[in-house]
Length: 267
Image (cartoon, rainbow, N blue to C red; front, side, top):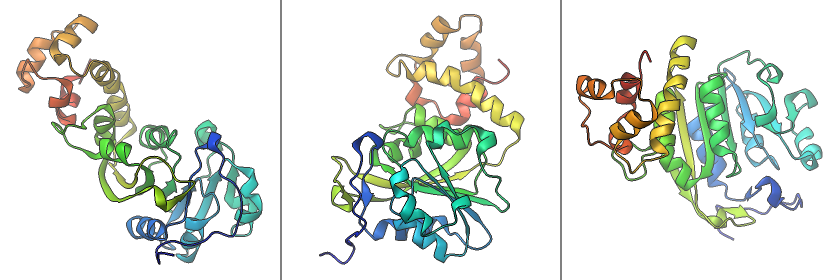
């Protein structure tokens, strides 16, 4: 067996309905730990710990750990690693904000996220908080790329803009299907996010801008100015484009996050 891969003696079959692909590649927890940089000075939330491959490494750092796991078949494994009050059972996306634990130290967030819920979980942290110092997730390679690319890149999308409005993003290493059991049909990558510190007022302003940005990327091949004139006719968009210096023939992928913010300011 390749030195990077290990056997897992905890025989629990992955549930397709939960999007489970258990990590068997030791390079993945190694990279997450390296990028997350946890220590006794931090609280760490792990989303979807599964069989605890990453959890064991997090505990070794001395950080305060809290786990969020949907699959209660993992109860014996995870309660063998952490105290019961360090684990919240259920779908993280369905937990109300007031049900989340209150971090007593700066927060770090990490996890091997199922492909179907990676983007919603990232959006929740960026829009609603709590605001971590860093988030490090393993997720679908395509999603990681779209979350991190700059304007005019061929993969630049609504997700690229959304992420850039709230965080600095970069992509780590890519891992193939053989790093997981069962093997997915696509590659995975590490995504590292460092949220931008901002006031609640500024955060709300950016959330409001997203409704306009979303409308544009729903018609991403169309000229942005024409889409805005048709969808939101009450605003003089030609004047705004001219004032900011955006080409009137620009498509959404040609407009930077900073330009979007200025374009939709005070509407």
